[in-house]
Image (tube, rainbow, N blue to C red; front, side, top):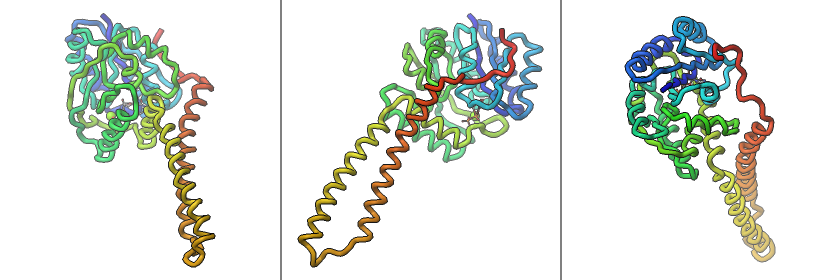
Length: 308
Ligand code: UDP
Ligand code: MG
């Protein structure tokens, strides 16, 4: 049995040595062989050199070096495309995902589960805004999608080759792996853990990247926003129609009380204008993703690798 460990890396020079050491300790104690796949996602620090040094001493260490920063989900996808394992673990490089949990995951895997994901009980050392928006997002996603995507779960998980093979065939360019994996099905279960603080360095997920990721998740797994746009449009049109009739009536039959209403016109114009822009924006978000898929550019560009 070969286990592939996929680690996306973006500016993690202070974490790589300890991560490798902790992973190695846990893996040698397990009854299997393993390979590491470090995907360097355009790091600007010494991460790449550190990975290369490790790979020279340890033949189980493979690396992929991207030509630039493509993003976390794409880095993981590159690992998924190239791994050879009978099962795969996806783990962050910053030690927020404790490597020791892999053992628990493996035990559940042995019981016959194709996916064992790690569910966060508590999150340490992350800003209130981040944990709050994350919690809100997962719950919103749960209500508007048909796929059962587990809440408070990242990509830290162990999964069987069967899942990996399906993932490789899923053509979408906006990757939302945790959703795709839920969509694939099979037997899935979880282990719980307390998410540690980042060991060192700073998060590579800016709010801009997080927002984009959230939109990828929603647009990939729900058409609800599009339907919402239609419904809002419909309701607002109805209200406007009633208002128009009233305005015409008032103009001709209530002349003595009728005041030329600047305020009411402004309010309705701004309101309808705002709703229209919102709906056009929602449609735009979906169109952007259609274009990405139609262009069909490669998902990532590899600059160098030590993989066959
Ligand atoms: N990461 C990446 N590309 C990016 C941003 C992050 O490969 O553009 C990696 C990062 O090195 C880490 C994992 O993805 O291994 C999770 O990122 P991070 O810890 O910065 O996110 P957070 O835990 O704060 O959500
Ligand atoms: Mg992190």
